[in-house]
Image (tube, rainbow, N blue to C red):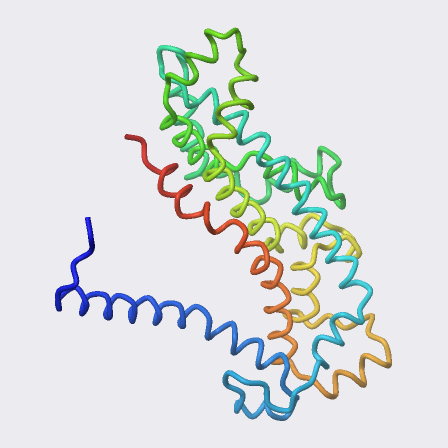
Length: 294
């Protein structure tokens, strides 16, 4: 059906596009401002005259952070955490969501397990038992302390199992009739058909691992093992400059907290900004289809 070209339709389109552009600007302008501050000189940033364009253009804030070998090491740890964490989370999420997506006639205790998962979202064991459990297993100060405790993200499991339940049951029945088992059906049929939902969950997982900083501070005994967000939190927020060199002291005279924090925020956001465009076409479809069971 051709779209209406009436005056009311045109007015609606203008208002709709204006509203969407306004929302987009609200999302982009703060990031542009942060980038401008991070590229501005100490004096102009302190005076608060930087808006959407750098004033007294300089890379001093980035040079200070990138000159630290600790930053490079923490960046590599974060990359390792995201890579391993995404694989582990998605593997266990898929394996857990598949049986829980079955009807009660196929999996008798399915409802009990689902409610158990839901309760775990509402209530946790607390910070101290969580820490003591990780310490008792010998995971402290290793990369696995950042990965194993969060190996099964419950929210992702619930999202994916609802997506699985929306897939045509005839496909699964045809697979079983051809002699396929559950693992073959899962990885040959369910997983390929669930790429929109899986891409959404991958995005959630990557962002979660990349932005996490608190567990790094709690579970790592040595700053050398901090992921990037934890390292930047100690340097920028807590201002822990105990290991600072004479050259870095001279650089600090040319930057201030505002430019340094702006550089941190932008560098912390940049990897996600680079990944998101490749996953955005799956994002909305996956989150909508996977969140409702018809």
